[in-house]
Length: 84
Image: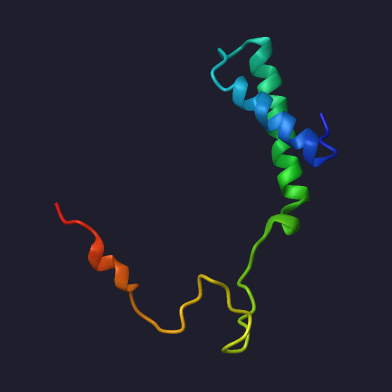
């Protein structure tokens, strides 16, 4: 079996998940073995597409999102958390 697209990969992963509890030495176990091999081959062939390295750091004061705080430290609303 050769996976040729992301859609086929997703379908193979879903099918492999459905077969994960099949008894050994069955036809379904052989299908699972082939699916896993195909999934591993796809992952190996496309490893560069899935690697996420460190992001480039923008210059200070640029590229800010709503999650970026202008100060370091814990947010002030943490004191509102209840203690048990």
